[in-house]
Image (cartoon, rainbow, N blue to C red; front, top):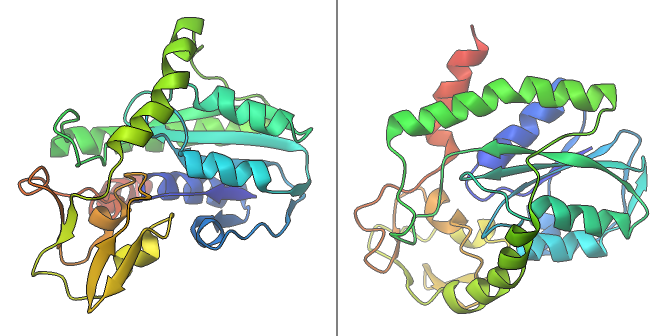
Length: 261
């Protein structure tokens, strides 16, 4: 069983492609997370959990959800992480969660995907050719990851040194507390009141009043609201006004053309 959370499509694509090649079930965890649904998940095949990486680890809300979730059937679990280039301690934290569940952590694979974080000038968005290159490199990597899972091999990723853990373990909660604010999000006159931003928010942080979205302050900066807005109506202060929001769907042609070859 392949499980995933994806804000702007990177992780969703990798998860669905892995599930297709394994002929396995693929489940989007978004609604389960939003509704705090912890109905038992059962699979006779290994569990494969796909997650993005925010600030050197998987989203904190997703870690919290997985800790409370019950998994039955197969005891093996693999992780797939998508990031802008650095997965940090994501694998270590995933391993800790599932060892406590008495499950067999079978390692993780990292996919370097295009960056979606438009809410900061510290992380420049990639040019079109760089986006396409990352997607193609990830597409080419899927085959070897699937082959390892089919063979029952452990997935191998770069070793994380102790000094990296020492730095990143305290960094993430501090960054999340002081930097991940929602007060600068707003909708322009392009907004049509469709409510998609509220539907895709994993933390239920957005409500729609008088056909306009309103943000509270329980935000993870996943960029789902900006990246999925059909009318390009959501901005974050002045930072995003001259940036094109990222969504994997805009670059679907890259993998579609590759799969046809």
